Each structure stands twice: as C-alpha cells, then as structure tokens.
Image (cartoon, rainbow, N blue to C red; front, side, top):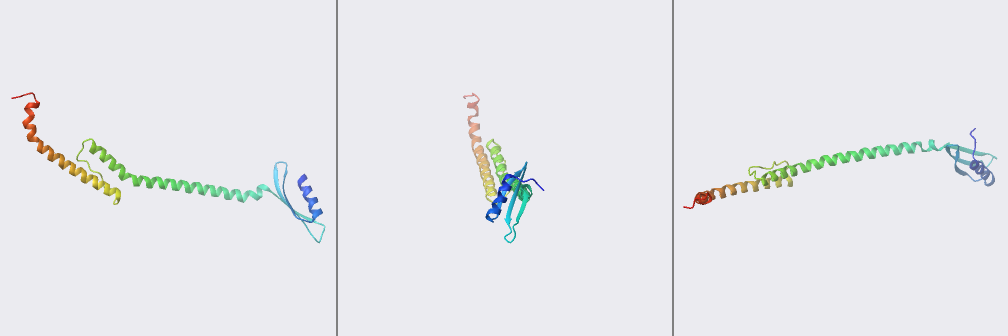
Length: 161
C-alpha cells in the first residue's frame, strides 16, 4: 500500500464526518496523484481511488503532441505552397522586368516572353507592342536623319567650306 499524505488523511476524515465525496491532488515524494473519496451510505466504508497524475495526463499529452505535429506540418505545407505559388505568379513579372531593363539599356530587339494568359501575359504583350513601335520609330527617325547627317557631316568634322 502506498504511503499517504496529510491532505489524503484530512480528506478521509472529512468524508467520514460529512458523508460527502471529496477530491484532492496530493504528492508523495515527487509523484503527484489525484484522489477521490466517497462514502458508502449503507456501510461505514469509504471508497478510495488514487491515480498518478502522469497516468491521467498521458492521453492529453499524446493528443497535444499530435496536434502540435499536425499544426507544424500544416503550417510548413502552407508555407511551401505559398512560396511555390508566389514564385509561379511572379515569374512572368520578373521576366518582363528583365526584358524592360535590357530594352532600357538600348537593346531594341528584346521582347518579353508571354508566359501567362492573364493580366501578366497582357502586360508582356503590351510591352512587346510598345517595344515594336519604339523600334520602328527609331528606325524611321534614323532614316529621316540620314540626309541631315550627310549635310552636317563636314561641319561636324571641322570642314567649313
């Protein structure tokens, strides 16, 4: 039989005196236990149940660990899914940005790849149309300037005849 604590003895005496059930939590050394005491009305007996706290909390601890694992796994899965979705959504924008940078640096023949059939694809198509118009405009302007260059070439070279 397990040794009993002062709290346990007090609860036992209270049940005997009042005929009312009692519950308590007590420690024997480093082990915590939960107890319940109830009188038997027809007899002068007291029914006692004592269960170690670790045994009571074991299913709760298992459930908590399972919940934490599922929560962590779900959070990780959602994070990875969001990362993949974000990359797939932004890939056409990055490609368009690269094309715009090259176009801005003077590469007039660059075109943006059309990777989507949504607003991002429409943006790439509009950029390509603008780049095509700009290239044609530059070619037209260069063609118009050729006679002027021939006319002013001697002046620019320092020949003032």
